Amino acid sequence: MSSLQKIKKDLFAHHFHKMIGLIFGDTDFPKKILKKVKKKNINYLIIDLSKSKKFKKDKKSYSVSIGQFGKIINILKENSCKKVLFAGKVHKPNFSSLKLDFKGIYYIPKIIKASKLGDAAVLKEIIRILSQNQIKTESSLKFNPELTLKKGNYSKVKPNNQDLLDVGKAIKTLNNLGQYNFSQGVVVRNKKVVSIEGRDGTEKMLRNSKSKKFRNHGVLVKFPKKKQDLRVDLPTIGFKTLKQCKTAGLKGVVIKGKQNVFLDKNKCINFANKNKMFITAK
Image 1 (cartoon, rainbow, N blue to C red):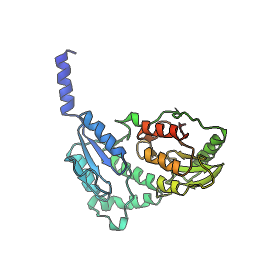
Image 2: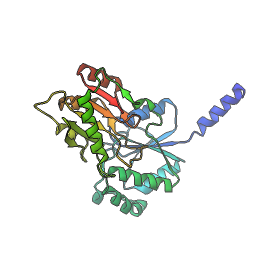
Image 3: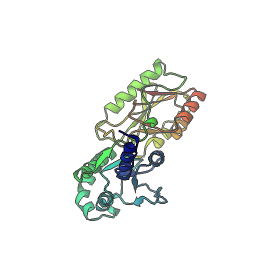
Image 4: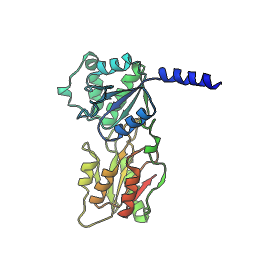
């Protein structure tokens, strides 16, 4: 291919570059994705489902309620957007106060049914509805493969035998939970389950895991839920999580290799090293 042909091909590809719909909730993960998408000059639009309408300053952002399915699907179709990507935490809506549009009314019974099974089931249902409308869901890490940890130990400290017993117990506990349980996290100390993540998330669980007696003891394990769609809603860990683990007196964090979103990697590793903690991806 001559260089002129190549330029033409690139221009053509850029001009007709498929639009990606970024369906964003809360946490910092969406911001990182947006930065990368802009850097790569990818055409995008944002469906902003965050509580504080984080992206309202972006000209390509649409603020929508999760009950307005017709509106969401119309926005995607009008912009010939055949692919979407979910990132960030979407809070389960209060169904009685939802603004519904016509399609929303049609789909909401399925979503309410799914919501009884947990957040993962709600997302699964939404993905199914989108695919019925010829809209494909991409992996949240599509543009940011650098935000996930592969298998390995990332800190100077490695888990010792006692830590590994705790880790084993935590993984077993998560595996035994119901398939649609919302828990992605569990804290184990001295082979005892201290707390399991509830609907309120990791922060609350870590607050409930403080120990006056033990410092630098015990582990937080965050794995995807069973039956989870690994394109969306991956367990996310960042600097805040690590600081909360330290406050709770935990010694380490274990996540599933390549099935996690790990923010502020270097900052976290430095913090772990300074505080004699470990970070491991299994």
